[in-house]
Image (cartoon, rainbow, N blue to C red; front, side, top):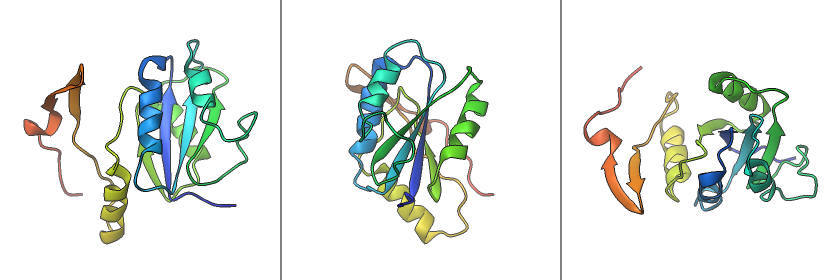
Length: 153
């Protein structure tokens, strides 16, 4: 059974509007050794159907572990985001954890670049990327243009 290098944590609560684009951005990654841990926090919209459409086998079995797969879990009851993330992390099998919100998407080389960063810097514990604010296909701003992230330990 393959253990993916990166577990992508997606916590969802009624996020159907941009969910397909978010999941597609993971499947479009140039780095392909990942799994998505999709934690459905009791969604009542189309989110479960959208996520389920990416499962490789009927019934979306959580036992199938392979490269480029989505593993779907539905919470028994809603939980705050931090708690839901921790529950999803417990299902992760990857060496590294990456978070993706359901209304965001990644550039195609995001995972490749961050995995390389971790491989080249064994003491590194956390990495983040800039955030592009986009509306109607136009980049309005970059978050780190004005507020640089903290560096160091």
